[in-house]
Image (cartoon, rainbow, N blue to C red):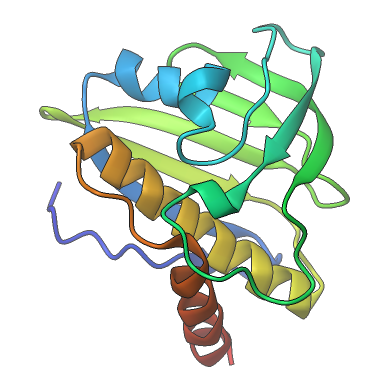
Length: 172
């Protein structure tokens, strides 16, 4: 697996976004960043999960804490979302309900000393939501890579704005 992995997501004809990242292993470490609230809040959102199919939980985003930058108009300081685990195979697969879309799946696979994370966000049909989601996942996964590699966090909001414009151009 090359370290030159394209970090941009790909959208298929079913309005499904797929993004991949190579992260430092082992796989159990990356799994912990997905499933443990204390670690997950460092790159995505806070919230405790009971590790069983059907378990409900709440995620809380505070993106201002992820490297800074001025928050765009229309975004609050905090965002909350109820969700539910729909599939679970530790430490390789976690699938959850995600708002009104078809859900999100995180798949982990060993890649030498690294771990390939494949994130799939299904059926995001509305173009505006797709642009927000694509830029959001990309920016959050960039933060995860920085955290996992011990690098300074990239400024979240400026990255999100740049990525949203980038995805608008890429997706036509």
